[in-house]
Amino acid sequence: MRPQNYPQSPKNLWEIFFQLTQIPRPSKHETKAIEYLKKLANDFNLNYVVDQANNVILYVPGKNGRENDPPVIIQNHIDMVTDATKGHEIDFLNDPLSLEVDGEWLKAVGTTLGADNGIGCAAALAVLFEQKMKHPPLELLFTVDEETGLNGALGLESKYLTGKKMLNLDTEEWGSLYIGCAGGIDYELIREYGLVEATEGFLTYRLDVKGFLGGHSGVDIHQQRGNALKFLAELLASMQEALDFEIIEIRGGRAHNIIPREAFVNLKLRQSDENKVINLSNELKQKWLSYLPQTDKSLEIDLTQLDPPPNEKVLKKEDQARLISYLILFPHGAHAYDLNDNSLVSMSNNFAKFLCIRGQVYTQSSLRFFDRNEVESLEQKVRSLGEVFEMKVEKHSEYPSWKPVRENSVLDLVKDVYKKIYNNEPEVTAIHAGLECGILRDKIGEIDVVSFGPTITGAHSPDERVYIPSVEKFWDLFKRVLEEI
Image (tube, rainbow, N blue to C red; front, side):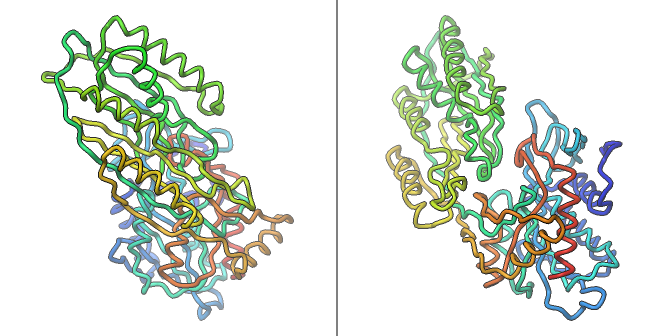
């Protein structure tokens, strides 16, 4: 749904972005978006290729005297994180998004917006409509499956790219030029516990933890937002000291790059212990609220009695105790900061997902780093924890960091153009998130790269929104850079 006050300038960029919000494009399900790109290529008589990983490259000829200049790569990812507020019904594989304008911000109703990286995609495609623009040949690279492990970039067939300069449009802070990004390592820890009959006379309950803001496990990890799994771990540990209960199942977290906003445990306990659980929940809630950021003040803990299913089984007491200790010990958050910039996280871990279903235990852990050597200590913690608790530990994926390079012809140009337009200096920095630039530099070879974009907040959560005035500024900078590069 397009709101009546939907942004109008720059016209083509906003129109294309709206079209993208109407096309389902979850990670690993980008087929409809790929068809959209192919149709645009055909409409403009462009050559294009879809490589073995389903990345799409559109070849845009140079215009207005720049037809024979060296090509420039413009890179974005076409997939988006799909997350919705509790109770909001949507089929992300088939349904379009509903949009709303809130003051100077554009957001989706009850879901992620996909401005990450849809605005960048729209900017790249809007160039097709700019007949008077003077730009070199462009290789518009749209990768897939970025949000679940940068898999499109990892599978890229670089033989289809010839450019030696690249603009990445996948950053979320207007006024900043990014020249570096974190690498990442994802681990999965798995084991199986035996189950036993529940104690006779115990009732079945569901204990929900919800209301945390969550957010991006890279760019938001330093903000000390609550992790629902860590809260639930503390609550279970407190309950273990005060009353008898038996765990049926635990679920929390959605994806490796999202800080868990919600978690729950189904358990058995005496009806007479209901108030103890409620009191312990409220005590822990007040403790956490005393130091959580304001964004997490909506924290809620609910205890609900359930109708027990037939043949309900629970964890053994000794396994339950070990599992609670494991949850308490599992690392989460920022672990180190850059020596030259103490505002930049240099190493972190996201305790991203935990499941205990019918005795099957699964953990997903996402480490980020700038220095591969530095992160080995944190990596060893995760592996050792798994070994101590007799889990199968598997490295699921790894991608390289993009170490900052300041001797960079593209950086010099973008800084110069920015200063000409806005009469001040942009911030040149790195980001504690996994842009595809590091992988692409490894794939393509030594290329000069800069990343920039409009202001987007709440990425990877239903609070995602884009600051409308920053989009026009971003577009103006992007156009001028293309004309001068």
